[in-house]
Image 1 (spheres, rainbow, N blue to C red):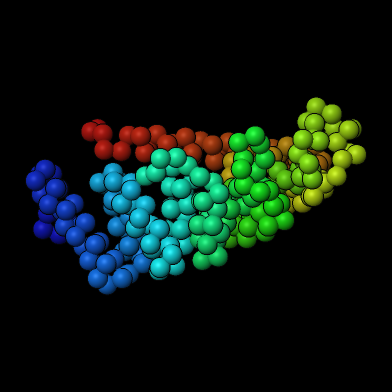
Image 2 (cartoon, rainbow, N blue to C red):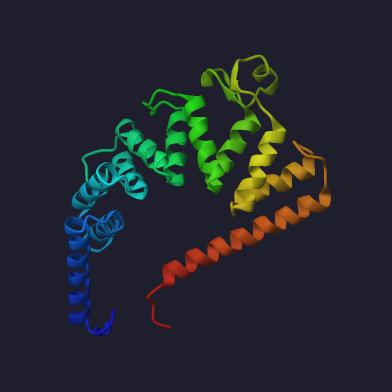
Length: 250
């Protein structure tokens, strides 16, 4: 930013244009994956050109093996950004590639797509494969992946989701499961997720300590984790407020 007065509109425009030139040179001439990803971000956030941004992310993923770009293009493909419509089936390989390249959020998304159920899900369900992606993401300290795994162990994962009835727990005991309910495992994953900053997981840990689900009853620990969940929720709300107010005059 040296040499630019960002309080002057013309200099801001010049700075932004030069930034784009710099990113293009670093990507296309120097072939630096990190800079290509920045170029994608620039085209996305500054130019609002989602089609070009998507092309940059896609190339950076496939040609330069940059995991974060695989995640971005996977997300674009999933929701249909820069395209006519979203396509989960087309998005999945990009999440899988991003995961193999070390991006934990890509692992999370691949795992969730492979374990998802519902009328609008057109990906062939593969719970063991999806579980492995989620576990890999959790091992890389992704709080959502750990939280998702905790939920899978909390209720169990039925072989045929249509057989599961949340209102008839006795009947559910007689159906076939790919992953059986295991409250201890559910607690361990919830605890990990809480440690990584997931307020919902902390609330679950509190409740499990209160009920003695998967862990010995402990009112003191239940209270402590409830307070942690409250602090995380307050911090989350404060962060949202700050982001909303960024750039406003005081």
